[in-house]
Length: 416
Ligand SMILES: [Fe+2]
Ligand SMILES: [Fe+2]
Ligand SMILES: [Fe+2]
Image 1 (spheres, helix red, strand yellow):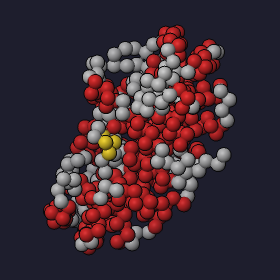
Image 2 (image 1 turned 180 degrees about the vertical axis):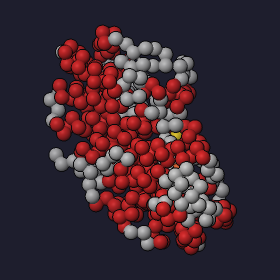
Image 3 (image 1 turned 30 degrees about the horizontal axis):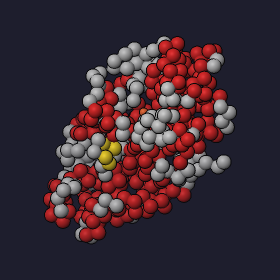
């Protein structure tokens, strides 16, 4: 089986993961990318740089996404000095990635001010052009209020940007923005809730190169890091689930390629957790019904995001069905046993195993014999697959090896 993914398709889908909030999807990244793309077209930015620009715009706040108080700060138009923290964190996240590393410098400087007053000390044209464009596009997007008629807010938005021309923003870019901002269609695109689909289709032009399966594993690892940072109890949870899933898949005779696919599913399984505020993930108290319903949304978003990626239909199922149960009482799809493929059952067993072996706000990690007792009980109650549970505990030697590998990764984690 040849596994190839178009980068534009993958980046667009993962960008929507950065837009998750308790109220559904926000629009900040794709709208920033839309504005940035228009500026780039208007000034005639080279095609290779346009690709970096649009991809970086789609992921630019990746360094803030795990931290809700940081995210909140970014919604203010006026930037304070602590805004640079997430830009640096985003740079650190992607700099060593073979696939996303090319976006690192752009992300690092996306709030740098033209006049050189930012901590990096870079000024004027020393700031990468892609960062200068995102800075301007990002601030314009922040000014946009969803509930106000767009042509009523246009003058105030443009004058707020103009006031910072030469201090925060590159004056040439501000001029370019004012030129094409005469087009009504630009503003209508920005406020049309369905336009993002057209936009993602347009950037397919950048999808001519392809990612292979190892590229996707590497990108999934970057996302696993931000997912696991949403709580200090989930230090390396996603990597642990990926590792245990791979072990179980091997026991069931999966091919080398299928094992890589299930690893990807493990790394992404809690992607939808980016929709859950940190306090909720870390709460030591018994959750209210409403709080629990918010937490239970996460596999739904995992599925809806991953299914947008061509070639990901199996991965989406394997990843997102980890809270479905064989008795049909799981969430969020309440799948019957007959619809739960082996891969989904494996990720589900791996998730329970890793979660029980990890620290929680309300308990210490459990000993392996206790984990086995609980999991065999769950299998008896048709919550998880008994054959897969049996695979996990069949050979104490390989289990203790596996536990050691997981323990090295996940010394603190959370059961979500
Ligand atoms: Fe930002
Ligand atoms: Fe932003
Ligand atoms: Fe989960």
